[in-house]
View 1 (cartoon, rainbow, N blue to C red):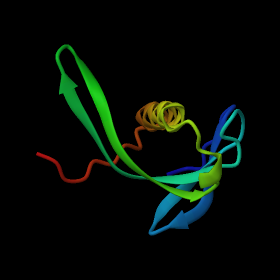
View 2: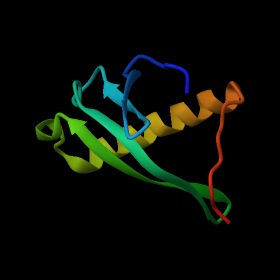
View 3: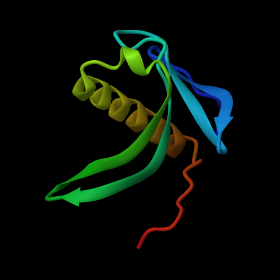
Length: 96
């Protein structure tokens, strides 16, 4: 994945288990670093729902309330996925 940044996060050059660390650079969770684990898109009627795992690298003490943090990183994941689709860099692994 190419290094990516926007107004509220950046995908860093640092890796954990070959996965890029993402740093939140603005807002109430500024300074939190995390990685995504498995990601799935599940059908939900006429739309789809993102299901994902994540691991906090630094700044766990800044994550309150948890539901707002999860909403933010879901937005980050969506931005990354759209960016990869635009650049034709999507890598699909496994699944049915």
